[in-house]
Image 1: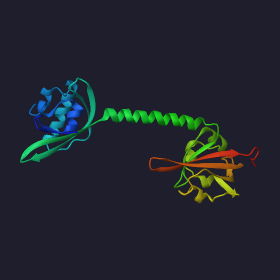
Image 2: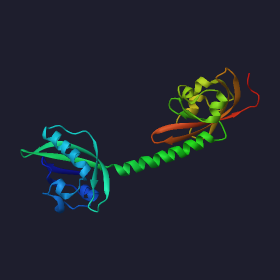
Image 3: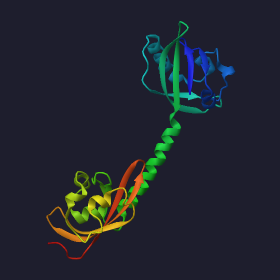
Image 4: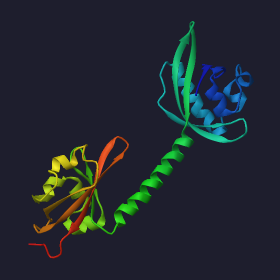
Length: 230
């Protein structure tokens, strides 16, 4: 939303988004001061005064979190930015605000979902690596993969898949082809791979590509032959 007021805090104009966010219609508030409208709680008045003082000195404000009171009495938290403007020689304040309560709720839901899938990934009953399809860098490794290879998560995240592999035997696809975008189905390679203690384990790695946002990732699932350390 945006609204315009003069340097004393009297509201000059506001857009429809401001009406929707605050619950006030333009004709109810234009020409009135922000204090008289009652949109500012008492504990926010000094902060608003500081913002107006900066604007009077022609200094745009940094994003500020501020609480507003809607017409129905509900408190909302917004991120406010204010800029000095000049309209017809009249110094005014242009402010933009966005509802960060919705943003915080969305972030909270995303974090809960990420935590849910992290628990599933971490506790999966098979060694799993999460691999960047473009670079072959290892993005993550679950508990069983770390136990199998002997590396910590941090050590694996500094490495890539080719560093773990030794010889590739009877592979239906070369590794670069397997990681390439066209190889989007489930594929596997039979290979030997190194552990931290210089042991060698042999088995299949099954790959499945998927996308997260604009990032292409691959899950590698290890299936290890018994007694293959040497």
